[in-house]
Length: 294
Ligand code: GLU
Image 1 (tube, rainbow, N blue to C red):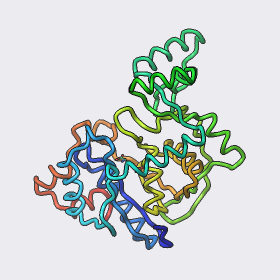
Image 2 (tube, protein in one colour):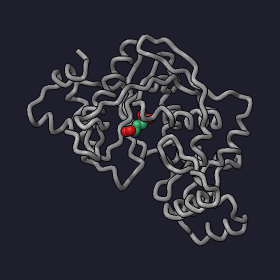
Image 3 (cartoon, rainbow, N blue to C red):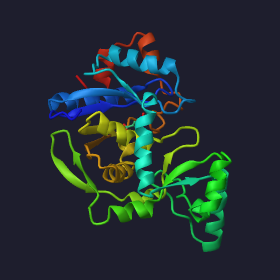
Image 4 (tube, protein in one colour):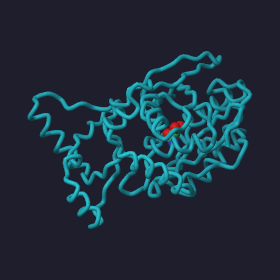
């Protein structure tokens, strides 16, 4: 599905209703796709079968149609493509880059605390502020791992970051960042700052990082436009693309809208949803104007 004209995508998760921040992201995608003569795809990021709900998915379609944003193909729903993610995981596994981790969140926290106490210095954090995985399960014997897997112990699959980096050593890990005018510059990435990231979760046989990378490639996405809160995560995406032999799209990170309290809009706080605004009689034109798209 590789297309020669640019392909953009908007990729919301149906774990809540869309708010103005999503509208902004979709509109930036729409504007840049039009400016660069590209097409725009929709992807429903619904791997989290517990938090994602059909009514939220329906309102994504309704809200975007109401805003007047159209897409050039039917939406790709991640929950229908677990086999694609499985194949990617198998590939990483065959390269010896994945390992099972049986730690609970509490065990990770306790291990980090112990390390901090021993070293007398803070344990390194990832760009989102979470402590890097301290590597407990990398010390398990092969027999131990086998026994726990056979016993059906819940586990995540982690990327052995050092081995992954060794495999790509000398290749130069970077992506091209583009701006509104199509000017580009190369950005070198540093995936090590994320440590041994999770490739497949306990409850879901994939992760955000893995599925986003696989889907962008399978959908032929050439231009990823998303919020600057995902800029640092792109380091992991570039690494996975390189390991899986997938192309690296160009990236653009837009600003995040902030609410009256200076916090970024989020579904978990009560930012007004597009559905509510629509019910109150706000027009799509007013939203476009408010967000600077006239
Ligand atoms: N599904 C993600 C979100 O709703 C966006 C993923 C992406 O654009 O890469 O925040």
